[in-house]
Length: 97
Image (cartoon, rainbow, N blue to C red; front, side, top):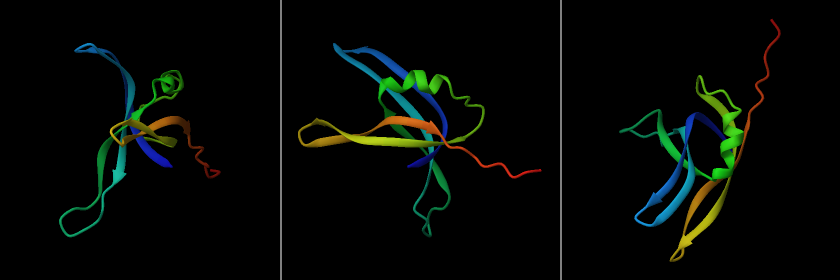
């Protein structure tokens, strides 16, 4: 899926004896358009820590479109979280000038 991404953050550490390691992608998503809301909103998408090296190579000086691949990962008790497992820049066709 294509997402407009504002930036990302890598979080790694230990909290109360539980280790964590993940990436947060800060994205823009279109809201459901209805009488009480319009436009877009910022959302967080959780990503696999293997994305860090790939994300470091992308310049985030503006909101950029990325092709985002996700997969469902079980978190226990029948629940899951959608996790970003791959990103790639979207090629923008520039019109000759």
